[in-house]
Amino acid sequence: MDLNNLLRVEKDERGVVTLTLNDPARFNALGSEMLQSLQQALDEIALDTSVRVVVLAASGKAFCAGHNLKDMAAHPQLDYYQQLFAQCSRMMQSITQLPVPVIARVQGMATAAGCQLVAQCDLAVASEHASFATSGINYGLFCATPSVPLVRNVPFKQAMEMLLTGDFMDAQTAKEQGLVNRVTSAEHLDAEVRRLVQAILSKPRAAVRMGKALLYQQREMGLQAAYDLAGQTMACNMMDADAQEGAQAFAQKRAPNWRSEAP
Image 1 (cartoon, one colour):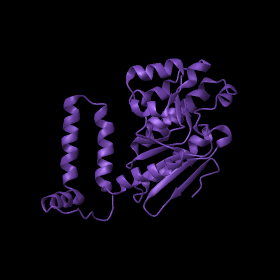
Image 2 (cartoon, rainbow, N blue to C red):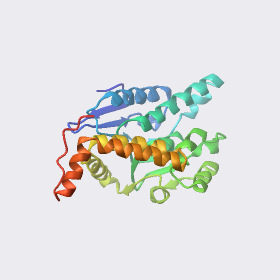
Image 3 (cartoon, helix red, strand yellow):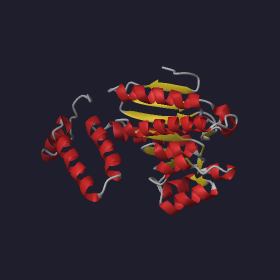
Image 4 (cartoon, rainbow, N blue to C red):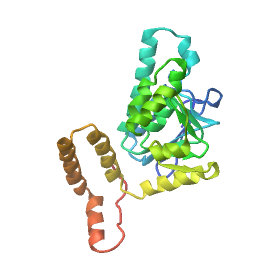
């Protein structure tokens, strides 16, 4: 199913959906139409209980250059900017709210809101040629909205340096700082993504869904509230048939036989 030429959407028989940003001439910029396409795709995925994993990829040399400053300069109205950033923020939060993991497949440069997109994804695998920057400051625009997921991924002082200097971070440094999970050669990028996807597919959907929701909720809580929520989540998780099967398989020293992956 193709929403339009800006975004390719593919789903395989395992329930893996690949969203490919497809505007390489503009470095896959997050203009209003691209954001609308992503939002529509994410909304559809959220309702599809057969989806297990989402891979966010891009065509061309760049992963995503963020917002198009040329377009922004052509519309010097406050309400336009407020609407654009609200649209982008909603799309970013939809990634977090999805009941399945979203993996960024980063083959090239990710700058400003493109770096934000990587940080917002649950997991990220990068080519050794990928690079990351919150470069708005170079053009007089502090990357305020990209800072939100960035400071939730990398150490605060490192995030501050990126935001204040606009300097690029290479892929290996991004891994060391926690922005991406894995770095590999360009020729092995798809294989590394597949390995991560398969690791997730081998786990029960219900446990993954509950776990993802918990992690994002408890991160914003105090210690007591986080433990209360985590304890309730584990109790509910243990009532799931797959958790019961997993416990029995452990006791019987055998591999678990997961039920059909219904929600």
